[in-house]
Amino acid sequence: MSETLIAEFWAAMATNDFAQAGRWLHPEFEYFMPQTGEYLQGRAGFVALNTAYPANGPWMFEVRSIIATTDRAVSDVDITDGTLVARAITFHTLQDGLILRQTEYWPEDYPAPDWRKPFMRVLPDRPF
Image (cartoon, rainbow, N blue to C red; front, top):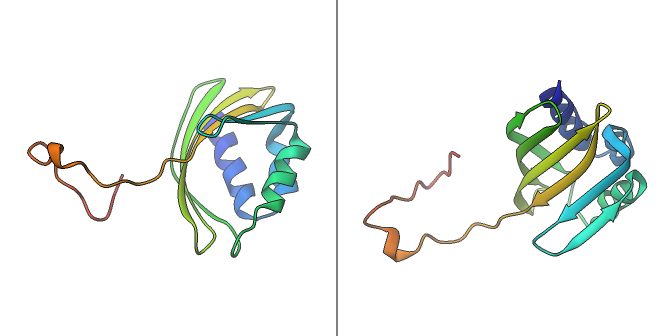
């Protein structure tokens, strides 16, 4: 059920109707972005944040994977608006059949360091 909940949340996000996506969030929802130190509380804030984002087109979401237990899940999602290409790794805490908390990381690609060349090879299409 937890995996289904997260998949349904991302499917709702893909409609670009963020108020609809907010229905999967707990009334006491909290959102953390550790890389920037930002915090948001409440469904309304999440909906407003995503609605206000200066996108270059409709958002598209491709779920790479979801790993879930009864009350926790992690999703790995590719996100694009046609110009921005990003990846979000999101840790979800679940309660009462809704998403209570999200801690989200937006890692950026970087070149492989030279010192690792004897041990690893770079895959050009990043299949993982």
